[in-house]
Image 1 (cartoon, one colour):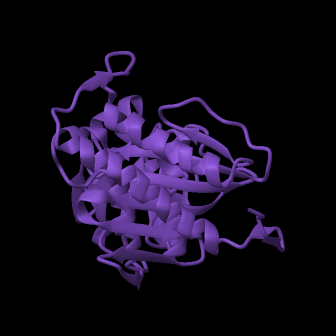
Image 2 (tube, rainbow, N blue to C red):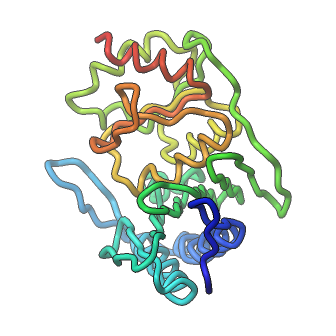
Length: 269
């Protein structure tokens, strides 16, 4: 299949449809394993519990198979398998289960994250919440949610004042030596919710959460989130006002003003 590129960007209609196919392939594996006793392996280091299940591996293998068959020149990077280098402009980034702790506890907010990178730039992002039958897909210019076959355009809340913020982070205990930087945020925002992993960014795009801050993420944890947040009108950047994600420290905000306020508070401690 030929990749059509105009003005330096591909025609993403076929890629968006294909990303949905990948999500459904992953769903078949992750939902199938839910009916079993889930075997959990700890792949963590330095006493940090980092779970992985057979469902994680099966879902990533299924997606890789689809990519190899449809776009053999595309690269693939994922959480569970070795990197496949691209022989084209495009690479797929896969996180088969983002929120494995929620998955192993039977909670419904774990997601599958799929991103298409063009020359290392995340240009298409998909967040799938299989237990909720919600797919969020964005290209940086717009984002939509697909549920029960119905598609609806999304936008962020437009919140600009940090005192009014509905804030989320996966787990404050994961911040380690940077935990003190989070304290001014926790003291200032209106309400805080924990434990939602990638789903928090989906709900930020939907306008229900205003601010998400995380640290030490890997690229497969955040590349799919960037086009979704930006497509809904939000801002996605690092902790210092830029876009250097080398340390994995990210901020997603409903507006640029809110992002700037969060950066200022993080630097104040």
